[in-house]
Image 1 (cartoon, rainbow, N blue to C red):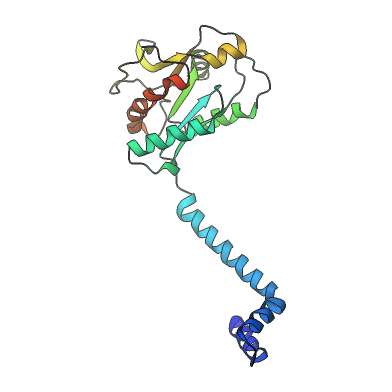
Image 2: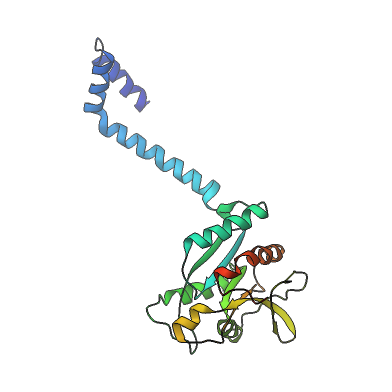
Length: 222
């Protein structure tokens, strides 16, 4: 009813005006009404869009710990994995924004809030795969984090990593980042899968996808 009243008022006051004059009149005297209407419409649109599309849970999440932060590389891996497995690219996350100190490993100029973020995501079962150094793997085990066995996956072409008699990771190569950061020349870079991740069925396909990107991390140990 309010909009009808405004329209009737505009028609009455612009009677006899040309189209250009009517537009000029409306903009001059009703710009704030138009702004309010547009703002309300935009709020409704983005609210509906968020609840319909923005609140979807990730289909697969890989975090890359203590490596060079490279969003272009991360996006490339996520998009390739999504395409190969028929997933929505918007729901596949590969995130290298996790650089922090742990245990005896002290890194300089890092965001230590990443530490809490990492373990909170792990606790909440929000991590399906991790690229991490061998010492970080051992630290996670000390923090009571468990990793899946690679039984049923195909690690062929990569060196495997054994934990208490079970193959639980593959070696992507030597950890060049840790060598540069703390001088650890013997650190292996691993790809492993937390045993509480929610998308176990996609771990094998992700391992297959990551074989293409070994050289972008530590260089494959074939």
